[in-house]
Length: 251
Image 1: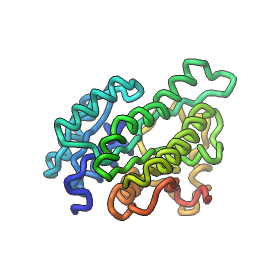
Image 2: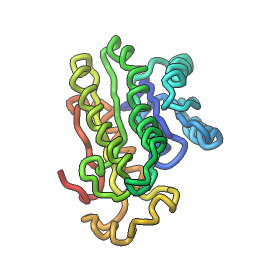
Image 3: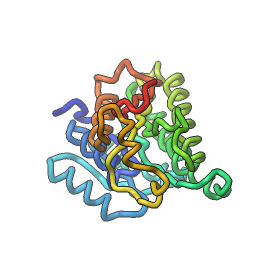
């Protein structure tokens, strides 16, 4: 299990759910992992401890990644603790549910800042070093509603996810010649711990019935897709959106 031996990864929003699964999966392949969070230090520390208990390398990287100065400081901390960053997985995100006309300016800006700006700030902080070393992986976690717009009351989130797809393509186009790939993983319905209030307007049973494989996905499904893109197996894949949704959306 050494596809990523000697590589260093940063995973944002990695204290639970999909981010935690990604951090554990990258570590299992030999990468040193910076586990990022902004509020729940106990959750981040638990993931770090789990990786270390399995013989891996990990460090807690507490930072609000929507703050460019905090991202710069985080990158310096990670480089000192683990080494230069080779892989970033921009997973952090918020999923507020509001009818369009009730979305405030603060709601809009907060969603864009957390879901889209953060990915730009994190990528910007590590791309110069990746370019110098001739290797890098940028993986953005988005969602297929950035393509379909199918979920109601999520206009700000849908716009941010569509922006992530565009950011991915821009990085892929500009940095491919330096040995750097950029891709998006777009999860479908994943069985995670979430705030029920954000999904009160959704008929969960009906949503699951629309999935051809007949079930929700696991956080591990997304993590395994990230390992594929981060490892040498993903060398010739860039500028793409990898949809992991059980066939609910077919592009």
